[in-house]
Image 1 (cartoon, helix red, strand yellow):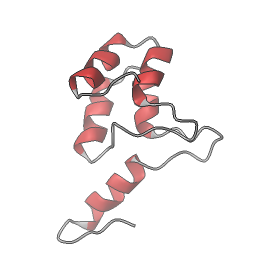
Image 2 (cartoon, one colour):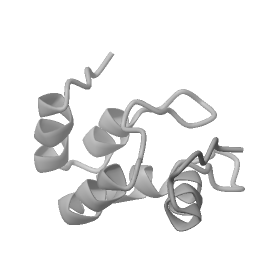
Image 3 (cartoon, one colour):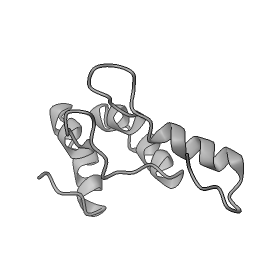
Image 4 (cartoon, one colour):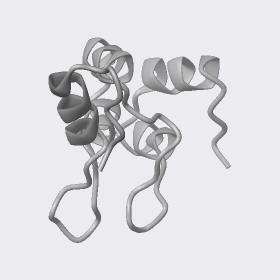
Length: 87
């Protein structure tokens, strides 16, 4: 559970949800899906609400990997600008 401190509970809940892995085999997050589909607006929103762009799924697939799998160069460039490496 997140340490809320003085942070409003809704912000903590949203951050927890954003970084939560799906119940499927792979454990993708909302951010993985946004990257795969090249939805930069959604990706920016998720990151602004505390999304961890360095996370990987259960099989260690990063956001950069799913951006490549989805053939989404804009998402790849955006993640690279944030400092994320393909390796």
